[in-house]
Image 1 (cartoon, rainbow, N blue to C red):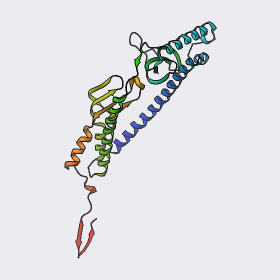
Image 2 (image 1 turned 180 degrees about the vertical axis):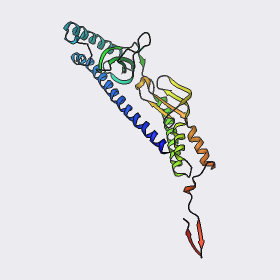
Image 3 (image 1 turned 120 degrees about the vertical axis):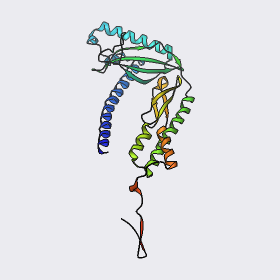
Image 4 (image 1 turned 60 degrees about the vertical axis):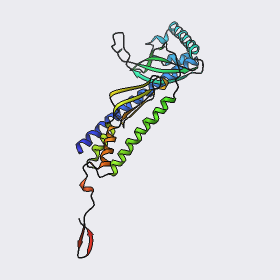
Length: 271
């Protein structure tokens, strides 16, 4: 048991450290990308150039003048497609592939959602992972109407119900006299199968072998473009509920109260 707990603690520490590094990079990419787009919309093109990795070309006035002209054309196209009141949302990061599906060395592609005038679109920026500066940027030729989020949030209520059920079962197990409670906790947390999801733009989807790794639920916040809820049938919680209701489980004998003994008319608890 001690070895298992030590192993679990070690895995959690490694995961936490990796998560911190990932979160810091995500904050950097998200902040720089939004600043870059804000500078373009405000015509602060010199600030845009400061966020780019131009490989020493920033001293070439002809090059920077051409780049500023490209910024101006890019800005005009965005205003034409989405209006002047724009909102930018960080979606995801991914390794950028070439035509042969091999990732471009030391780069990462950042996707931003742009919304305005009742539409949403996508902007991609390619970063150098060493300098954390922008190499290229482009707007994808995609314009979709902003989706109705009513069904999405109604499905979110079902996801919340699954979470509440699993939390309730964890509390019930803690208060019960079940043997090996730590094993029951793991069963409730991890045994959640057949994933059912709802994507805000694509509707329902499912995975026959999907397994939600945290309490039978999942949530991916990616703006209008990619946000989704996910739930799975809480088989671990349902099985544990059946055992507790029927009493078909091994009880922890150490939790039983000490027997009451009678000696010379006096009652006292045994050791």
